[in-house]
Amino acid sequence: MKLIIHTIHELPFVKLSGTVIVADVLRATSSIVTMLASGAEKIFPVNHHGKALQMRQQNPTYLLAGEENGLKAKGFDLGNSPVELEQAQIKGQTVVMSTTNGTKAIVGSVGAGHLLIGSFLNLEAVIDKALQLGEDITIVCSEKSGIMAYEDHLFAAVAASQINHRVCDLELGDSTRWAINALQGLLGNGSEITDGQVLHVLRNCSHGKHLIDRGFSQDLEFIARRNYFQIVPELRGGALVGA
Ligand code: MLT
Image (tube, rainbow, N blue to C red; front, top):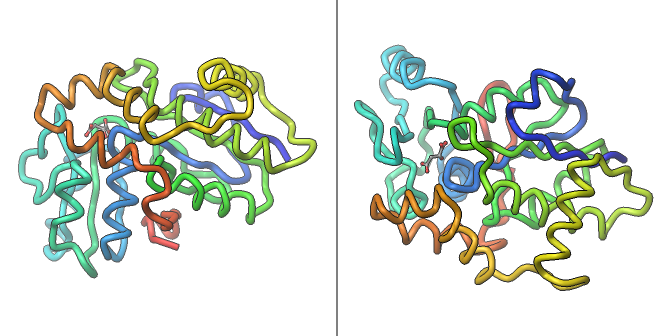
């Protein structure tokens, strides 16, 4: 089994196969996990707001979720704050979601055998599911408008270390080896990251600081809770559904 980490801008140069886990920890993939755990029936990820608005015109019962510069996008029903989405009335609803980077990373990763959504909120569950599928695993890190996102690489490093720990003879790509070594340097050999350490990274990375400035510091506390949900969103027929 191979384990590879890619950023979204590497995808034009590789052919995805096996199982892909997409991570946009702040905040799109954490929000998707939260919405499905809160009872949303399915979520269509789309790569621009116009497409979301058009889908709602054709299906007036659909809810639109997503952000523009962190705040609820114009004409949408819901923003991209998992704290707010957990309180929203979304049970049984179909949601169309469009965000600046995260949903683009998901749409850009379509084509693999299985596409799963990862976050610290469902860390263990998404790893279990990927291992059950028994295929090569690629973790795709989102970015922030073309710039590397520390929080997504932290997620990738933590997930990769746990997978490496559980699977013998895993073949590691260069970026995966680098991420695992960097995490060991950060934590010390053998120790596991804590929620407090995740939160520290979220508060100090550039997008985390941007979200704090916009009044979303509670989102960071919410998102840092490892294994808070057991749900694993998977793309089926163009929509993310919980499993
Ligand atoms: C994104 O997709 O760029 C993010 O999820 C932005 C955010 O809402 O923090």
